[in-house]
Image 1 (cartoon, rainbow, N blue to C red):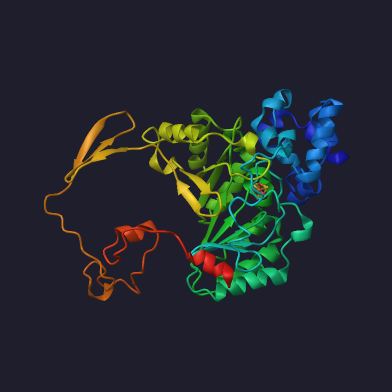
Image 2: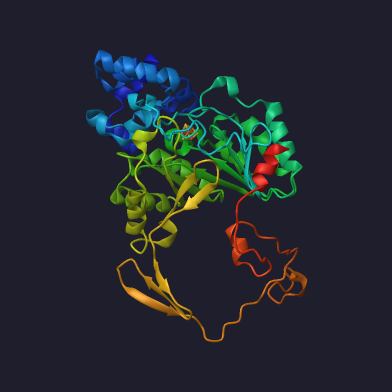
Length: 437
Ligand code: SF4
């Protein structure tokens, strides 16, 4: 740790900006080994002294929610202004994490309940989340899985991962597998390759997604060796988690470039956090930096109702204001979908400003981002192709290979021609059935 303290403290601003790091600093294993886990070390690095009462409270917080910050991420903090720093707030514990509000939940997204076998969350019909690790390079203070991340007693074992893979193999509807945790890139290259091999062997799996924050908090993890493993698979997508434009550094750009240069589509999931990024200007800068680096802003998440996160939560209005400030004001592909992950496990619900003002039998009234109100008239002679689920007789499909119309459920069933439902009362949901098995 002493060596780490020395290196962090002696790195000048010029070094940070010029990317002039020595080999030790760039070694991801060195970064992990020298992760900062206690308040004393933070005090030494930032050259600050917390008052004794505050320090005690922070230490109490750490007993419930541990801290781990890579030297790299810590070095991004503005040492002179650390208390207001968005990097510091994501990395350093806050006594408010211990206050549990009435609506807080241990597992707000019902991930444990929507879990037919250990390590698998199966909420949507065609995709699953496979927990392969519960270790992260950094323990983000706003993490929705705080209850699990960092708990070494619940690291998924190889046999548990195999059981999850068996579940995927036996469920032909699953076409998309998200490797998550924890952070899958905290596994060794060899172990990750084994998991990717096993999942890739399943014929009905079309897409493998990996969720990782390493390009943000440990960009040196994206080594040439890791890239060589990833490039063996042609169906990998990666989602990362930048929350603030200051996190996009020369080193993170290099990491992103290594991934995009082998053709991996990159997305980003941002969590809307009070006093970190709840500002339209900050968000615009963030999405612009992301797309410059070939990362598509994918989701903007409303902060979940997990225990100890109330001080990070915003109201929904600021999220809508952010989307209002982006739509029409910047490229469409730079605008994330703002979502609330339904408490209780209903999945992501998109929310956005209202653009549809009214409609009649032959037109709709819309407004654009400037406030212009306009109409769109429906065609006089439009005839909808009514669907009876007999695709082999339908002109729309022509020779589309293996096309088969599937039954719709949920709200989509109220709109479909082949379903006579006029109301829905959700019950016997597929995901509940799966959990009963
Ligand atoms: S990297 Fe993701 S899973 Fe890990 S602590 Fe941060 S938010 Fe949680």
